[in-house]
Length: 337
Length: 159
Image (cartoon, rainbow over all chains, first blue to last red; front, side, top):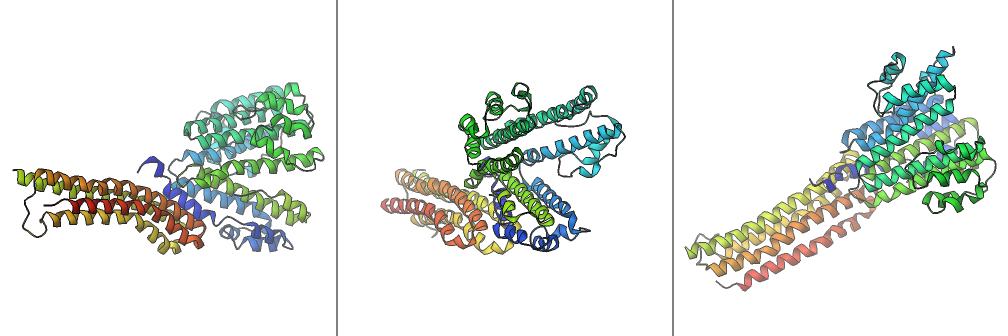
């Protein structure tokens, strides 16, 4: 079969799987639930039902969400012709696990308890292998350049005791890997997605840096290469009031969306709003995939939609459990498709 | 020798028509079938709709077979008593088969891709089945035009 059509089965199956994504009415029903038990009952009528049955208590809903995501990733890994497309989406989980392990390592050295419960199975590297590598300090077999970055991060901590530097090192490697894998795929739409993802992360970092009051002169190293927005423009954002950001980055789709942010209040509120806007930006970038009956970006688009669904479910359940204002929660929900 | 060469050129034309059109249909039905299998893995209830769309690129193969039959009937090979066919007449018959051979091959593949896309469409919106059938049927127009051309050309050659 010609390469152009080898995604026929995959895309058709993803389209059918897309019908099972939760819609607005499901979100609304969860949000309207009286308490967490009622919300879980509504969730039990969806694709998450299989995992809810295994929970000891409804408070463990995060396990059900993780199980559903794990199922989707494993299923796609079986039938997607180019496995790298699924792998690239799981990279952030690998780096999440690495961060958890590095921090656990640090905590342990300081006499605290390790937090292996924060590890996720959603990464490409089995958690047992990661734990073994960190425990034995034998990093040789770790992929994604971790065999170099991991000992470097541990050494960085031991020298400077600055967790921000360690996080920066690991984030740099994560986005380098995403960029590299995106380029290796040699698919323009995947490349555009990786660039958009880097932009989103950089803008998110700019908001975070501004919140903690980092000086513009030392901020450049917190931004990653490879996005549409240059590092110079990102650094310039830090000395500009938030209302003026669109002027500096308005030439990109990401910048246009930032301009749509309403009522910029305190930085915590801005960060929460910005997270939603940046997620919606990626959704918008990937939404073009629906026009390609045989295009590979449908895989990334579906996985992203599933991630957004999981994020929405998590937001809704946490809000219902804590009795958060429903109107505010509705504003936090991400666009799924 | 000349008599046999004319017949052989006619047979070549019939073989090209049936062969290329059949190959195109096989590829087209295969492409649509892959999409169909993808949808049915998740939703087996859509078998009827998927089958209808998957079958559409199969018509080109039938047109190729029909043309081959017409050629074989024309030169009398089906009746058991072959007619005397000159080289130029044989060459004419062979050329008359080319519209079917070429157009059916490419249109079947194109129709297969359209059908595959429409199968994906009904996976998402089953209520749009009517429209989903019309889109690949548009490709069929050109397969029918090629068949008509071949029939007209074949009829214009006098033996």
